[in-house]
Image 1 (cartoon, one colour):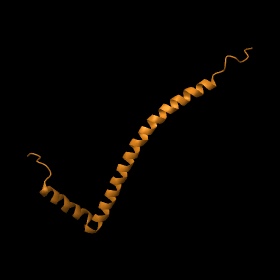
Image 2 (cartoon, rainbow, N blue to C red; image 1 turned 180 degrees about the vertical axis):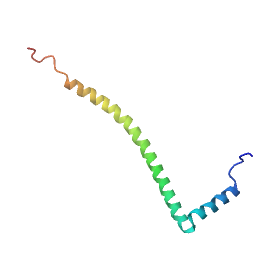
Image 3 (cartoon, helix red, strand yellow; image 1 turned 120 degrees about the vertical axis):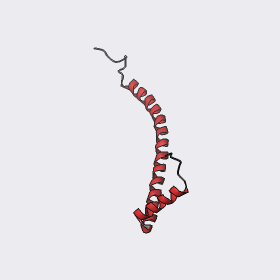
Image 4 (tube, rainbow, N blue to C red; image 1 turned 120 degrees about the horizontal axis):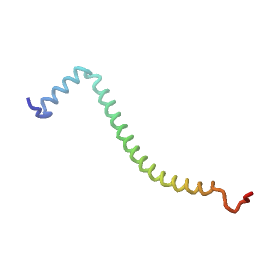
Length: 82
């Protein structure tokens, strides 16, 4: 028994099973919820990618800023030494 693929007969069977499980009235709501969830997932994935790129740029700035603040924290050699 070989797995041939997903054809029109399989698609019809899936549609019939979905109609039996959810009913014709709830099918529209299920489709809408599924579409909304998929859209939100895509938006979050895009936002996440752009935030990661921004974090890489920000981490470079933080490295430069932290090295500058370390220089300020060091005691100067011109101060009075006891």
